[in-house]
Image (tube, rainbow, N blue to C red):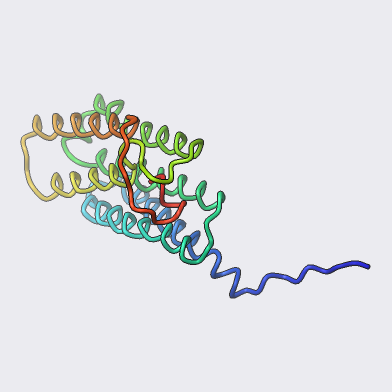
Length: 196
């Protein structure tokens, strides 16, 4: 006697994927920032604001996943891709549009440390089991700090030497903090949000 599996109701399918939709919204904001940064130097303020909005969105996907009982390994992996895009690559791209950073190609390898360190941190998280604490600085925090830094640079005129020096020091510091092994106790918001 054969048993037929009933298809999952659309309402249940939508409910289960609400956290994934939030994660994709986070990634979409990051992609918009990348688009605005390609060949343009006049959208830095908007780009930084979008990154900060994405940080707010990212803060809710894990909480909602937990409340809905929709935590999953798929969501965890998807969240990592979104975080790398929005809080790793996007801040890197924004900084490259700002003067005098844009006119200093030798700074590129230093600024590239930010997404590289972020990728390392996300990969380390996905291979571990960190439920009660963060290991190193979350990439969401690092990307948000870079976005705030970009806002400051885009709104005020600073000496070129100060801009280049501060961008270098901040990027190196954030990168080292992301790959470091110090622990930060955290509030539980759902497994998907644990690796930010």
